[in-house]
Image 1 (cartoon, rainbow, N blue to C red):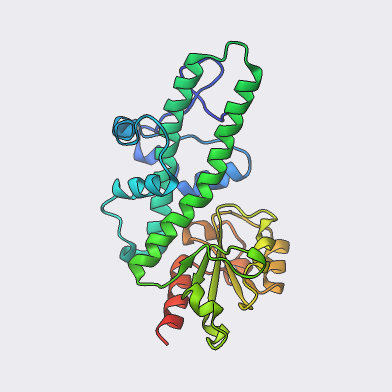
Image 2 (cartoon, rainbow, N blue to C red; image 1 turned 90 degrees about the horizontal axis):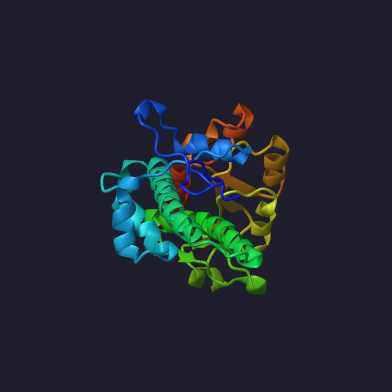
Amino acid sequence: MFGFSDLSHPGFSIREELETEQDRIEFASRFILENIGVAVEVTEEAWLDDMLRKFGGGFPTTRKFSAYARSTLPEIQAQDGHDEALMAWMEREEILFRTLEKHLIGERLSQGFDGDVNGFISFSLSVQNRRKSRAGLALENHLEILFQECGIRYTRTPRTENKSRPDFIFPGINEYRDPDFDSLDLTMLGVKSSCKDRWRQVLAEADRIYRKHLLTLEAAISKNQTDEMKSKNLQLVLPKALQDTYSKHQRDWLMSVSGFTEHVLDKQEK
């Protein structure tokens, strides 16, 4: 139910970090496998004690956890490559999250549920919901730091028409609300770690912006879907490491993370 292997409790297990660098599965590859239903678990036990001390034996806020993940990679700087930095931060956070989650789930299972079926169901649902909400927020958190390090002005999750809340508006919500500010100098970015059919939600989130952008980590979106995105004036933004899962025709249209930051900076510096 929790997608683990080798957990020290009957019926649950997790795969430890692979022994050699040659055997290690990159984040992009894992993401592709998980999108087709193949569970791949990697943990990093070396950081567990530090996380338990720092977070008091529980889960911190997503912002705190994202900041912690970045702090464990001091050698990764945004200026060294926007696509590469984002993927490295996301990969590290995923590994650290699964490591902490494995430990906390193991502790809870060891306590047992004493026949409380509803309690067990509630616990398992909380695990799944935490995973889903964390992934999207982690991506937004790391993007926010990337924008800050690039000197990009933005507003995160502002309110626009009909109480919509786009993930990012550039250069900011004040400019968006100013009728004298040229709408061509505005940019909107939706962020969805996996978009499925939910990408259409982005279309209604900022009426003043004709051509919208959506950043995702979803691999191999079908040509029919990307063609529909194009027809709706939605530009897909994807880290370079994931773009090889798309056809050549699609790749010619995709925008990289660095391509997006350059696009926003060009508008900002006008």
